[in-house]
Image 1: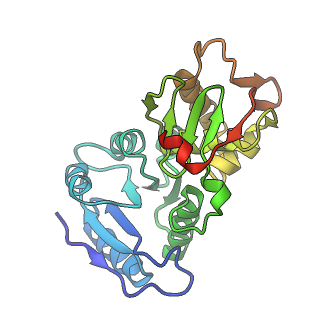
Image 2: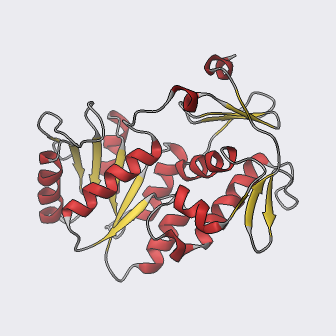
Length: 260
């Protein structure tokens, strides 16, 4: 496993006063090492891995805030590892992709990746995207206390601090980072029609309108988890020609309520 590169004391403009831990997974040694060095100078702590196997080993022994992931690698590819990261670990992912991998980029967004950059890229752009994703997922951001309050809707609860979704029987239902962001966007705007462009801006960011099927796929996945019958959804309704609407009331609970 590659040695972690630790950045200097956090400088002005960083996401948080605490170290932000990145896992950089790429089989291109020269690019990976140069990028790790650059990111460390920006104040990040970087652990390197040259394939998915070493990345999984690092994930088993350390905690990370975000993963930078190459799509094309020998052995297990980045798409497979990304699915594990977003479904099992709820970790934000930024893909590092080649220009000819447009289809893979779309698939990556559909399975829950947060963003992508196309090689060759300007390192400053990558840092901006890292910070943007970290802000979207709440890492290191100054979050108002009322935004920490759990949501209750139709008997379900969503704890935004723990990213824990609980069904009416009290069973925890795992959700990916993308599903969490989509559900939060709908819960923040109950009974309002949210068109695809607005949802994509809130959930994916960047030029997500190029991948308008991504939000439909995430809605389908979320419906399978919270609807009694995903083929006849009652909570997340489709508004033809308009987008989607959460068709129930939402209450914000005292923070301790989620643990009762």
